Length: 543
Ligand code: G16
Image (cartoon, rainbow, N blue to C red; front, side, top):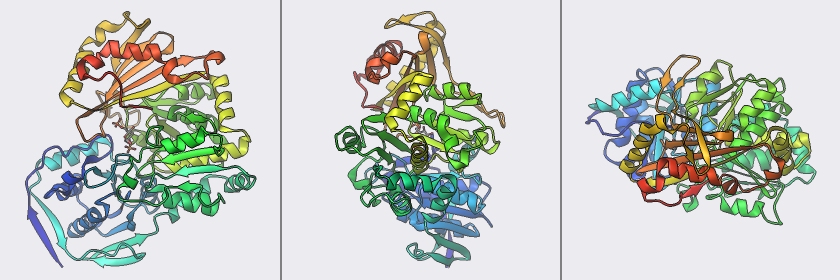
């Protein structure tokens, strides 16, 4: 086997976004594109010589080919060992768990998460650090800097490694260990939750449906929900991962998981419904006749987590990303817990979790997790809900109603304007940024502005600073609007507008959020001139 040193030149735009580098698949398949970025990761982390890494992905188109390239490049640069999921598959939380459990030097996750897969869709690569979490900004900045000066990469000339067979093999002096992707993760879940209680709940006639959306959680959900916990076969649907996710959009929200939502709103609804995304870190929770917003789910879990064995002694603290609704803050206040507000991106929770300042955290973008790994975890959230339901002996709807009665309701919705012209989106943000100082005291759609700023974060653990994390407008009576440009899209710009309003009046609790938020929505357009700048008169997605 020969090691080749291939001459290359820097490729523009290899800047990791909210979560790794995400681009269209054909871009990743272009000459030197993947190789340049992988070499930049090696250079950015000080080389891989003698190191052990985890490797796996969500099984999307190009996952298998990319894995072989990454293995050959790791071997060429002297890595000691790569632990890889069978067939190069690992859910993102399972990868995080393996990195931690095997005390490796980090890992590479191949995924574009909830973005569709296929040759004409998206692919992605991200590096996770030894704590199991997505690389923080100082590391991704070093990787990006390395892409700008790339002149050569090293790759072994070798046959493909057989990733279908479990066990170890040698690749140019590097050990490749192929592991069952599900086993270690399933063992971790059994440690965290009262599986006996969940098993009894299900044996007692409690029904559920889990929609794996043709993505990576299929094998995990089948093994745990049907295999271990006794849910009848067929409770997990769309459970076989496919490279194009069955032609769908593996994003667990009411738009893309419409079949599940329709079922849960019908007369035939099971007691509980859930879905996860392409790489298994997001979740959507539903009860019979009710959809639980991610922000509410986070708050309910924070209020009830002590019912699961792993959290029975209470939570150290909690955190949410800034645009996530402040329902969590109300729970934290009542329980006397510290509540942190971080920028969008799971990587910002890492330091707080490592330092033991928080146990539980989450985001409006369907992500919830805890200190058990350093990624958000879709199936974990489902199991925590099931554990809570088993203990509370109430329906999801009843739990939600009781939660609102105790804490009040934070009406919440996110409006996405997708594939907007990037120049128009930036012009809108720039204009609004320039006017922030004048907005306080003005009224829009009957609501007055009481605060206006651009969110910047100072990490309480290492003091690192992150500026420009979203424009925030506070309205009277607890209303709030946040404007951000997504860092995960691959075409043009995606404008996200996060809308929130508070109510402590039980008579309003059953209102439709879009109606309850009507004046905040109108104010959001008036304040930023969304229609004027983008030419769009309605969002593409409302979550
Ligand atoms: C990633 C990040 C999340 C973030 C989400 C959306 O999730 O890990 O923290 O909330 O993207 O980010 P943006 O608003 O910038 O598009 P995932 O599931 O895509 O890895």
